[in-house]
Image 1 (spheres, helix red, strand yellow):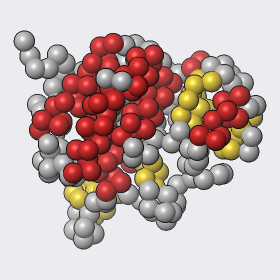
Image 2 (tube, one colour):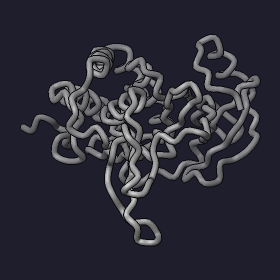
Image 3 (cartoon, one colour):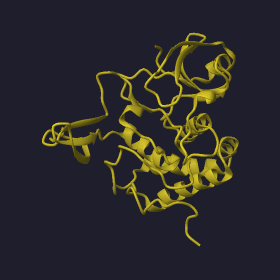
Length: 262
Protein backbone atom coordinates (compact mmCIF):
# COMPACT_ATOMS: atom_id res chain seq x y z
CA UNK A 1 0.00 0.00 0.00
CA UNK A 2 1.09 3.55 -0.65
CA UNK A 3 1.81 6.09 2.04
CA UNK A 4 -0.96 8.62 2.59
CA UNK A 5 -0.92 11.48 0.11
CA UNK A 6 -3.06 14.60 0.33
CA UNK A 7 -1.38 16.70 -2.34
CA UNK A 8 -3.70 18.86 -4.41
CA UNK A 9 -1.77 17.89 -7.53
CA UNK A 10 -3.45 14.48 -7.32
CA UNK A 11 -6.96 15.86 -6.94
CA UNK A 12 -8.00 15.63 -10.58
CA UNK A 13 -6.76 12.15 -11.31
CA UNK A 14 -8.13 10.78 -8.04
CA UNK A 15 -11.53 12.33 -8.66
CA UNK A 16 -11.81 11.15 -12.27
CA UNK A 17 -9.47 8.16 -12.56
CA UNK A 18 -10.74 4.60 -12.69
CA UNK A 19 -11.34 3.11 -9.25
CA UNK A 20 -10.21 -0.52 -9.27
CA UNK A 21 -11.25 -2.66 -6.30
CA UNK A 22 -8.58 -5.01 -4.93
CA UNK A 23 -10.15 -6.25 -1.69
CA UNK A 24 -12.73 -5.82 1.05
CA UNK A 25 -12.30 -5.10 4.75
CA UNK A 26 -14.69 -7.74 6.08
CA UNK A 27 -14.67 -6.71 9.74
CA UNK A 28 -15.99 -3.21 8.95
CA UNK A 29 -19.58 -2.57 10.05
CA UNK A 30 -20.35 -0.85 6.72
CA UNK A 31 -19.29 -2.10 3.30
CA UNK A 32 -15.64 -1.03 2.99
CA UNK A 33 -13.33 -1.79 0.08
CA UNK A 34 -9.66 -1.21 -0.70
CA UNK A 35 -8.86 -0.03 -4.18
CA UNK A 36 -6.46 1.88 -6.37
CA UNK A 37 -6.84 4.99 -8.50
CA UNK A 38 -3.99 5.79 -10.85
CA UNK A 39 -1.56 3.89 -8.62
CA UNK A 40 -2.76 5.48 -5.36
CA UNK A 41 -4.25 3.15 -2.72
CA UNK A 42 -7.64 4.24 -1.38
CA UNK A 43 -10.51 3.13 0.83
CA UNK A 44 -13.96 3.14 -0.81
CA UNK A 45 -17.25 3.08 1.13
CA UNK A 46 -20.29 3.05 -1.18
CA UNK A 47 -23.47 4.65 0.14
CA UNK A 48 -25.37 1.52 -0.94
CA UNK A 49 -23.40 -0.51 1.60
CA UNK A 50 -24.07 1.76 4.58
CA UNK A 51 -25.97 0.65 7.66
CA UNK A 52 -26.73 3.98 9.37
CA UNK A 53 -27.59 3.86 13.06
CA UNK A 54 -31.02 4.89 14.23
CA UNK A 55 -29.64 7.91 16.10
CA UNK A 56 -27.89 9.31 13.01
CA UNK A 57 -30.91 9.65 10.72
CA UNK A 58 -29.95 12.65 8.61
CA UNK A 59 -27.64 12.34 5.62
CA UNK A 60 -25.28 9.56 4.69
CA UNK A 61 -22.27 8.33 6.58
CA UNK A 62 -20.19 9.10 3.49
CA UNK A 63 -21.03 12.80 3.69
CA UNK A 64 -20.05 12.87 7.36
CA UNK A 65 -16.68 11.34 6.47
CA UNK A 66 -16.10 14.12 3.93
CA UNK A 67 -17.26 16.75 6.43
CA UNK A 68 -14.72 15.41 8.94
CA UNK A 69 -11.95 15.89 6.39
CA UNK A 70 -13.12 19.46 5.73
CA UNK A 71 -12.97 20.16 9.47
CA UNK A 72 -9.49 18.63 9.64
CA UNK A 73 -8.34 20.89 6.82
CA UNK A 74 -9.70 23.94 8.61
CA UNK A 75 -7.83 23.04 11.80
CA UNK A 76 -4.67 22.67 9.70
CA UNK A 77 -3.58 19.58 11.64
CA UNK A 78 -3.94 16.86 8.97
CA UNK A 79 -5.97 14.66 11.31
CA UNK A 80 -8.03 13.02 8.53
CA UNK A 81 -6.53 11.67 5.29
CA UNK A 82 -7.88 13.36 2.16
CA UNK A 83 -11.48 12.28 1.65
CA UNK A 84 -14.00 13.06 -1.08
CA UNK A 85 -17.23 11.87 -2.74
CA UNK A 86 -17.25 10.23 -6.15
CA UNK A 87 -18.78 7.41 -8.18
CA UNK A 88 -17.27 3.95 -8.04
CA UNK A 89 -17.91 0.37 -9.15
CA UNK A 90 -20.66 -0.01 -6.52
CA UNK A 91 -22.13 3.46 -6.87
CA UNK A 92 -21.63 6.85 -5.26
CA UNK A 93 -19.65 6.86 -2.06
CA UNK A 94 -16.75 8.09 0.02
CA UNK A 95 -13.15 7.61 -1.10
CA UNK A 96 -10.19 8.24 1.21
CA UNK A 97 -6.46 8.03 0.55
CA UNK A 98 -5.08 4.94 2.26
CA UNK A 99 -2.87 5.46 5.31
CA UNK A 100 -0.48 2.62 6.07
CA UNK A 101 -0.11 2.32 9.87
CA UNK A 102 3.19 1.47 11.50
CA UNK A 103 2.68 -1.97 13.15
CA UNK A 104 5.43 -1.22 15.67
CA UNK A 105 3.39 1.58 17.27
CA UNK A 106 0.18 1.42 19.30
CA UNK A 107 -0.92 4.86 20.59
CA UNK A 108 -3.81 3.31 22.56
CA UNK A 109 -3.30 0.13 24.57
CA UNK A 110 -4.55 -2.18 27.30
CA UNK A 111 -1.92 -3.09 29.90
CA UNK A 112 -1.87 -4.66 33.37
CA UNK A 113 -2.92 -2.02 35.88
CA UNK A 114 0.49 -2.12 37.56
CA UNK A 115 2.42 -1.77 34.29
CA UNK A 116 1.39 1.63 32.91
CA UNK A 117 4.47 3.04 31.10
CA UNK A 118 5.92 6.33 32.31
CA UNK A 119 4.53 9.29 30.40
CA UNK A 120 1.35 7.52 29.27
CA UNK A 121 -2.11 8.69 30.34
CA UNK A 122 -4.57 6.48 32.21
CA UNK A 123 -8.22 6.46 31.06
CA UNK A 124 -9.94 3.80 33.18
CA UNK A 125 -9.60 0.27 34.57
CA UNK A 126 -11.51 -2.87 33.69
CA UNK A 127 -11.29 -6.65 33.93
CA UNK A 128 -9.85 -8.98 31.33
CA UNK A 129 -11.15 -12.47 30.52
CA UNK A 130 -9.36 -13.86 33.60
CA UNK A 131 -10.81 -11.13 35.89
CA UNK A 132 -7.44 -9.40 36.15
CA UNK A 133 -7.44 -5.60 36.37
CA UNK A 134 -6.24 -3.95 33.17
CA UNK A 135 -5.88 -0.27 32.30
CA UNK A 136 -6.88 1.53 29.12
CA UNK A 137 -4.08 3.99 28.37
CA UNK A 138 -2.90 6.21 25.55
CA UNK A 139 0.24 8.11 24.73
CA UNK A 140 0.62 11.78 25.68
CA UNK A 141 1.53 13.30 22.32
CA UNK A 142 0.72 16.57 20.55
CA UNK A 143 -0.70 14.68 17.55
CA UNK A 144 -3.12 12.70 19.71
CA UNK A 145 -4.14 15.79 21.72
CA UNK A 146 -5.05 17.56 18.49
CA UNK A 147 -7.13 14.56 17.48
CA UNK A 148 -8.96 14.74 20.81
CA UNK A 149 -9.79 18.42 20.21
CA UNK A 150 -10.92 17.60 16.67
CA UNK A 151 -13.19 14.85 18.04
CA UNK A 152 -14.87 17.22 20.50
CA UNK A 153 -15.75 19.72 17.76
CA UNK A 154 -16.79 16.96 15.31
CA UNK A 155 -18.77 15.28 18.11
CA UNK A 156 -17.21 11.95 17.20
CA UNK A 157 -19.34 9.09 18.52
CA UNK A 158 -16.88 6.34 17.55
CA UNK A 159 -13.22 7.04 18.39
CA UNK A 160 -11.84 3.56 18.94
CA UNK A 161 -8.16 2.76 19.30
CA UNK A 162 -8.33 1.00 15.96
CA UNK A 163 -9.48 4.24 14.33
CA UNK A 164 -6.10 5.85 15.12
CA UNK A 165 -3.41 5.07 12.55
CA UNK A 166 0.18 5.84 13.62
CA UNK A 167 2.78 6.52 10.93
CA UNK A 168 6.45 5.69 11.13
CA UNK A 169 7.21 9.43 11.09
CA UNK A 170 5.21 9.96 14.30
CA UNK A 171 2.02 11.43 12.85
CA UNK A 172 -1.37 10.03 13.85
CA UNK A 173 -4.27 9.87 11.40
CA UNK A 174 -7.90 9.41 12.41
CA UNK A 175 -10.28 7.38 10.24
CA UNK A 176 -13.90 6.15 10.29
CA UNK A 177 -15.82 9.38 10.89
CA UNK A 178 -19.29 8.31 9.73
CA UNK A 179 -20.75 8.91 13.21
CA UNK A 180 -19.94 12.59 13.63
CA UNK A 181 -21.64 16.01 13.72
CA UNK A 182 -24.83 14.96 15.50
CA UNK A 183 -26.72 17.82 17.18
CA UNK A 184 -26.92 15.93 20.48
CA UNK A 185 -23.82 15.42 22.61
CA UNK A 186 -22.56 11.97 21.56
CA UNK A 187 -18.80 12.12 22.15
CA UNK A 188 -17.61 8.52 22.62
CA UNK A 189 -13.84 8.19 22.65
CA UNK A 190 -10.87 6.41 24.19
CA UNK A 191 -9.00 9.74 24.35
CA UNK A 192 -10.02 10.93 27.82
CA UNK A 193 -6.50 11.18 29.22
CA UNK A 194 -6.39 15.00 29.15
CA UNK A 195 -9.67 15.42 31.03
CA UNK A 196 -9.73 18.81 32.75
CA UNK A 197 -6.35 19.93 31.37
CA UNK A 198 -6.04 23.38 29.80
CA UNK A 199 -5.88 23.69 26.04
CA UNK A 200 -2.50 24.84 24.77
CA UNK A 201 -1.88 27.81 22.48
CA UNK A 202 -1.76 25.67 19.30
CA UNK A 203 -5.09 24.08 20.13
CA UNK A 204 -6.72 27.43 20.85
CA UNK A 205 -5.33 28.82 17.57
CA UNK A 206 -6.79 25.84 15.70
CA UNK A 207 -10.19 26.34 17.29
CA UNK A 208 -10.13 30.02 16.40
CA UNK A 209 -9.32 29.16 12.76
CA UNK A 210 -12.23 26.74 12.63
CA UNK A 211 -14.62 29.20 14.25
CA UNK A 212 -13.73 31.90 11.74
CA UNK A 213 -13.90 29.42 8.86
CA UNK A 214 -17.37 28.26 9.89
CA UNK A 215 -18.55 31.72 8.90
CA UNK A 216 -16.88 31.28 5.50
CA UNK A 217 -15.60 28.42 3.36
CA UNK A 218 -15.91 25.65 5.94
CA UNK A 219 -19.47 26.65 6.75
CA UNK A 220 -20.35 26.53 3.05
CA UNK A 221 -18.76 23.09 2.62
CA UNK A 222 -20.49 21.66 5.69
CA UNK A 223 -23.75 23.19 4.50
CA UNK A 224 -23.62 20.93 1.45
CA UNK A 225 -22.95 17.82 3.55
CA UNK A 226 -24.90 18.24 6.80
CA UNK A 227 -28.17 19.71 8.02
CA UNK A 228 -28.28 23.40 9.04
CA UNK A 229 -28.83 22.29 12.63
CA UNK A 230 -25.70 20.13 12.56
CA UNK A 231 -23.60 22.99 11.19
CA UNK A 232 -24.94 25.30 13.91
CA UNK A 233 -24.19 22.69 16.57
CA UNK A 234 -20.60 22.42 15.32
CA UNK A 235 -20.14 26.18 15.75
CA UNK A 236 -21.67 26.04 19.23
CA UNK A 237 -19.35 23.25 20.32
CA UNK A 238 -16.41 25.26 19.04
CA UNK A 239 -17.58 28.36 20.93
CA UNK A 240 -18.09 26.42 24.14
CA UNK A 241 -14.68 24.75 23.95
CA UNK A 242 -13.01 28.11 23.38
CA UNK A 243 -14.89 29.59 26.33
CA UNK A 244 -13.94 26.71 28.64
CA UNK A 245 -10.34 26.48 27.39
CA UNK A 246 -9.93 22.96 28.81
CA UNK A 247 -10.70 19.39 27.81
CA UNK A 248 -14.31 18.76 28.89
CA UNK A 249 -15.64 15.73 30.70
CA UNK A 250 -17.88 13.06 29.18
CA UNK A 251 -21.08 14.66 30.42
CA UNK A 252 -22.47 17.99 31.54
CA UNK A 253 -19.84 20.27 30.03
CA UNK A 254 -20.75 19.73 26.37
CA UNK A 255 -24.55 19.55 26.41
CA UNK A 256 -26.94 19.07 23.52
CA UNK A 257 -27.91 22.14 21.55
CA UNK A 258 -29.46 24.67 21.81
CA UNK A 259 -26.72 26.18 23.94
CA UNK A 260 -26.90 28.30 25.97
CA UNK A 261 -30.37 27.21 27.13
CA UNK A 262 -33.19 29.69 26.64
